[in-house]
Length: 386
Image (cartoon, rainbow, N blue to C red; front, side):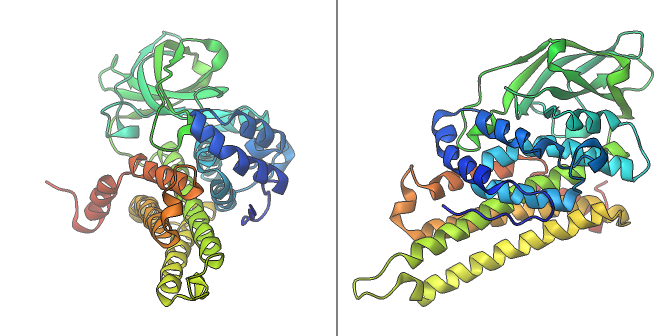
């Protein structure tokens, strides 16, 4: 198998990339966390790629980090998706700092120390995501809080060093959403061994129970009103999450095209004609490549706009959710077309394309979903309902 680094700046070392690709089928089959991938990538400096050079990092912005994630996803989608949650936090901290904020400096500090960051945000039944919470945040009287609740899809559950938590403080006249960080040594965090999914199995995104987890005042980073807002924290997380998740699905599409090309080049019809000479096959491959290129360019362009602090105003959120949604839908289409072009061998459970066909379907469940994206885009052009 040959893998290619497509990003500029820091790249995954080629030998590490090959080993990551070789381990991916085993992690998937065993429903196991990608522990060896994490160990090698941490040693290679991956956790620090968005950290300033004077702190031991590579100072990559969102655009180049998205390129790294695209490359990593072509080798091992679940590894890229899981570790992408760490990079979301690092890039959110960069976005906040670029816009004059310092309240996420601790994120950069943790990444500089090779600490693995994870998200404890998603909750069962909470479609508002960052704009409301079912988790309770009880003040401790000294500026800190105790968080109690259930989180779902907590990627990196077996290995994180630092976990973001957020919940709702209803002790005052108006409810507030409180964001902070807990470290594993604090205790009070329980992960259920319940991650047994169709795809993206190696992320081990387990259900997480917060048992009055105490976050002291110095690790509380933000208190926001309930409901939609464009606070720098929300923008930083949202922009990085949507585009880094999208980049994973671009990488899946890239890999599906490469596998289809390899397959049709190596096969011949009964009359000896190469399958790659079939005009229908050529048209299908061309359409797949064109579709993958289109979403790659969208992600790259919007990530560059984040890095360059373009003033897109009210267009930011429709563009971000639309790009993520299109990337996922396009990647699924490309993988399905690759399965069709390659033929019956792709339907074997042991084939890489079959694994991609399962992994790619996870994309529809990441925020923002297709329906949520459509509502956001419609409101931006038609105005809100009511």
